Image 1 (tube, rainbow, N blue to C red):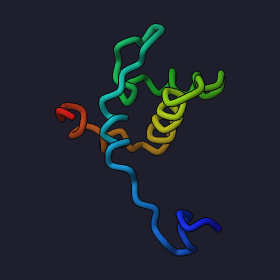
Image 2 (image 1 turned 90 degrees about the vertical axis):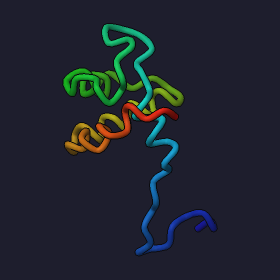
Image 3 (image 1 turned 60 degrees about the vertical axis):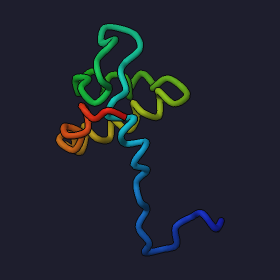
Length: 85
């Protein structure tokens, strides 16, 4: 176990900057170009997950959006969308 890994029973804290960035990020291509990632239709995000998310940061962000949508957590991003970061 590395020093950065949480020990059993410890909570992992979210990266606030990553959450804010995800709330503001937009789809750079395709039918939904310009849409915020968190506003993409669930069916589209599920389709992307089956097809395979792109590599890099965009793929990681889309994977996070997939988990958010599958777990019904979109409401958490509503107050963050219009923040000026």
